[in-house]
Length: 397
Image (tube, rainbow, N blue to C red):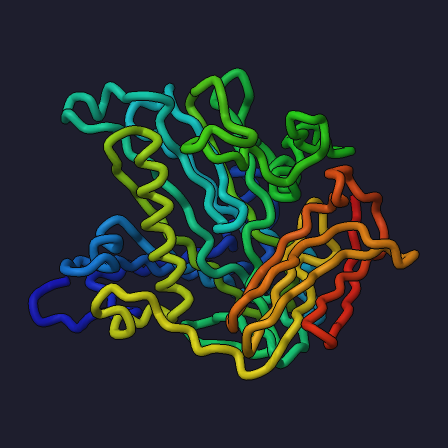
């Protein structure tokens, strides 16, 4: 900011704003072969330059980006027009230092797609620095209305009842060589839906190391060396996706991405530092970017629930995993089970005493033996002493 300027959006110390649309058919057709649909994108970027607390130190490594999507249509768009399956993707060609020695990964619980160096990097060696890590965090996905007044979403830096924000629904990457980047809208459409870009028709899904279709490539933890990890470092391209969601003519949606850096004593320590900073980015978004609540760098104390609540799982239908959230007003011994349509117990998700608070459990679509459960209707049941509640969910493979 210049001297005398007031802080901008979300009390930020610097704000940049620009707008674009797709109304130039020559440009859109030349890019990926798609005609205009009348979509306007308003982009706001903001950042902070403050010191003195863990929060403000983390904010030195974070840039927030809000994409506001407005479906305005073209002169030929009918009033009843709507987009039934829309996706938004954060695409990046990250190049952490030298472009040819990068690896990527994703954190499905924190909605992060990130890039890190394989060992050391010649560009950063010139400055006697270890290579950093860079992450893109989906801190606010598009809001999807649920009709449940207990659900809360964030939109325009406010809480919205009866809706939820989507998380990261897919993550994938490709290399500059020997793979070729997508060159048509249909190939990007495949990528957003968790398929390989080619062939364009009869999409081919990504496969995990066991040969099963997956929406999330390389979700392992490189710091601990566990799970499915990227290998053979190269010049990476990556994208994290949220969707699908729908938009009627005149609707507005918004997505907020945090660009987060981390520099540790080594290439893997940088991943840990980046995820630590990403936690502060998520906390900021959860507080609607209220710096005053974190003046001393303390976590925002969330009020304890006043009553019990078992939420509908999300996503639903799902594949390969889904989240089940519930709230406890007091301490209970919690048992959370998954049953099939015959009433047979498939999986025990929780069996422990928990204090008052908000909790999440995840079902990965397997039974207690670790075998994959077939597609179909399932029930999840929570028991708190003599009280119990059951909800339905649908697994689609």
